Length: 279
Image 1 (tube, rainbow, N blue to C red):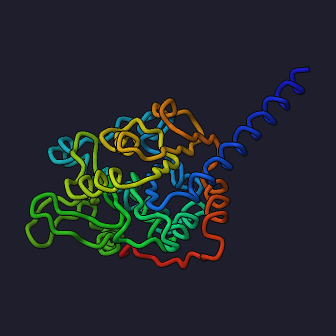
Image 2 (tube, helix red, strand yellow):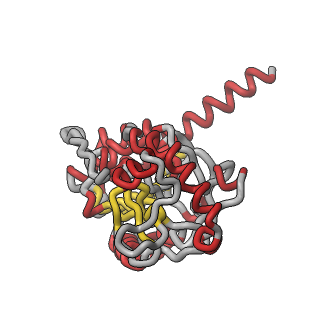
């Protein structure tokens, strides 16, 4: 009896997801300015762990802060050891069906911008226009001097790590280096945030993909779009705080759902991947 109840519940959930996808396709066909807002859930299907969301890495260990990074040499040394060991896997990650679907939709003119909380560069690798991918939390493929602001290619700094430099510093000013990503307690880059707000205000469909919508101020962007009259659609495996105001909620994997959405809206477009990470 228990197994029968589980099967019935599974069929009901599948039916709800199919109905929600059909509703999203109907809305999408009428939309002219779709903005995608992506979080870790779109990249976990490429093997990249979720750091900030429920059950993510930072729930299992204390997240780093910029203050500690600047003040504690051992924190910096530990960071670069972790970076030396972990960056190759991130750099080798490949886009999945979700990234490719959004690239197709962008190339067809349906998606006008992609706002992402991710630092992995997979949207660009999938073929999305780098000029229309807004990286709210920065990029792991760039390294920034915390003192003079010089940007270095991640590959160049990684070679220094492999050559035994366990605490790389800026060769221009001697300042501390760190990936050009946002740590807890840091403000979002003003330019990227301004672009994202403008995109949210001008879209007619805000498509949230794989975000828990709990990290502010980024999580406010879908609400801004809704307040400005856009349709709000959310594709996520778990519930989010904005489900209650969303017009469409799909509890399913990002890759397969977006692939079907793109096939319905842009059937004649094939994404052409181009690694734009600068590594």
